[in-house]
Structures are given as C-alpha cells and as structure tokens.
Length: 366
Image (cartoon, rainbow, N blue to C red; front, side, top):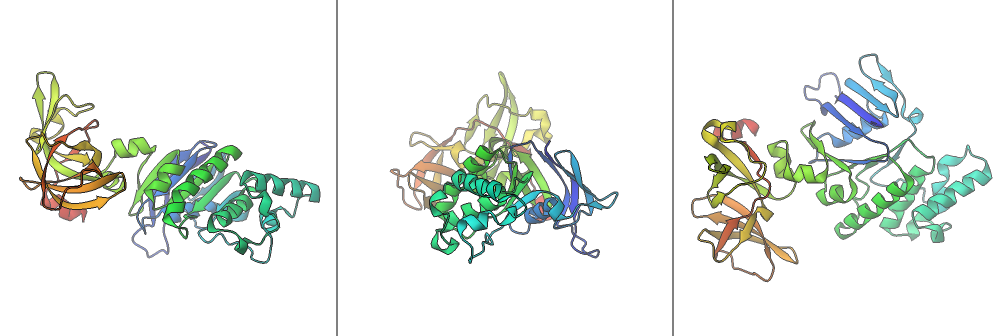
C-alpha cells in the first residue's frame, strides 16, 4: 500500500482518558482516493492531521511510499514540511492580493522561472481555469476558488493529497457535482488522496474506498457497495443509507435457510446465515428503504407515519400493525396521505443480520 496507517492512536493531552483516534488501521494504493466519513467529533479530522504530521501519534505507525513518517514506538515524527504532503482546508486559505496564477505558483519559488510558469499553466489547464489566470480569487465563484486551492496543492507534486471538508462552505446542490469534478481531476493527475467529509453523497461520488468512523474507531474500510450491502456493524448499517432493524427468525427450509419477518417470509435469500448462527435463529434484520416494495395486492399492510418528497420518489416511514417500523422508497406519483394504510412486501436481495438487540444491550450501547 502507498499510504499505510497501522494501529494509529491520537490523544490530546496526557490526562485525556478518551482517545480522539483509537487503533485505526487502513491502506491506500497509489492513485486511489480514500474518504473518511462519520459524525462530528468521531476523529476523522484528527486522523487526517496525524497523517499530515500536524498531530503526533500516541501509538502506531504511518508510512507513505514505503517511507516511515511516524512511529510512536521509536518516537519518530517527521515534520509536516518534510513529508511532501499537500493539504486543502475548508476555507481554501487563498491569498486575496495575488492572482489565480500567482496563488497556484506560490509554493514553486524554488523552481526556475520557465519551469514554474509551465507547471502553473499545467495546473490551470488541469482544473479548467486557464481563462482566469490573471483574475483575483474574490472575482470567482466558490467552486472555482475550490479548484484554485486544489491546483495550488497539486502544483508541488505532493506524494499524497489530504482534503479536510473542502466543500463545507458551498451550496448543497454544488457539492456532489464538485466531488465528481474533483475525482476526475485527481484521477487525471494520478494523485493519491485522502478526503474527510460528513456527507455520504460526497463520499460515494469521490471515494474508491471509504472508512466509517465512530467515537474514534474506524469501524469499516471498504468500497461504497460493501458498506451499504455488507455493513460490519450496527453503526455502519445505520449511518450509511436509510435503514431500520426489525426482529426476524432464520429457520431451516427444504431448499436451505429462509427468514421469517413481520411482513412476510424471505424465501431462498442470498448469503443468508444458517439458523445455528443465532440462538434459536433469533436475530435482527437490516431493512433498507429499497428492501420494501409498495404493493397494493399484498396482504401485509402498513400505516404511513411520515413522508419526505425526494423528487422522483417519496421516502415513506411506515408502521406495521404489529408495531415494527420500516422505510420504503415509493414513486412520487403514488402520493398517499399520512395515516393511510398501504400494502407492502419484502424484496431483500442482501440479507444483513445482527444478534438480537435487547433493551439491556441497547442501553449499554447508548
């Protein structure tokens, strides 16, 4: 792996009983884009700062391109300026008195003039801002300023690029577009990058691999498909996508295991655990909104408790007569009223189960 983070722990102050990052491990291959995602205070920015050299590791090791940057066991800590790592911050930190071209070339003063100008021009072309080279940053849009900051970070040809929520100050509608644009730029330049965000759509649009953090721990590291369909923990299952847990029972059928749920049986489901995986086959089943289909002909009915319009579809929050809650994506021309009962049936392609959660374990989890 080009970037290797091995069991890294970050603590702020010797008396801090809780680590900001606890034994996090992951790797990035050369040219890959990794994303750290999680709620506020989960440790994702602290982990990014440790890779940058802005925070010391209390435990663990960090290496880039086979070169060791941090090793808590030996006390090795390479200063940030010696790591050849670029960083793009939330506020871009552009120089208002310099032109776009001079902002991009700011870190290239050590190069001969002709080489410096050629590098700046290459970066302007890469981010599509050659026409704005002589303009001031404040004369450009937020998205264009973000591209200036990216070009400036890429200009010195860093071994690794780190980005800390660079879209946080932009309009929501612009973020996903810019994430896709940023991905294209990074791929075109062959840059290895690590990105921090709390926005799932940004993470999905940008990342080759995504790490979900919770309370300082990296709970899962994998591609978006794996996080969504094969979450490693209840937290990941709840955090990625819309979903709820419902009690279920795995039983032995003639053709293999099948799953009894409050709204019907899952017959011959893919990747289903055996009944022996849980005591008496009792478990909790993860149901995504796309696992529940609106079907007027179904004998199973659910009452609409909430509805959120999403353009082409509604996200319905439904309550079964037995008390269980489920979510469902329903085409927006099926505009039912709150309190109305509609037919639903299961359409579960990926069976994701966890041990049955009791009131006691739920309270312990907090």
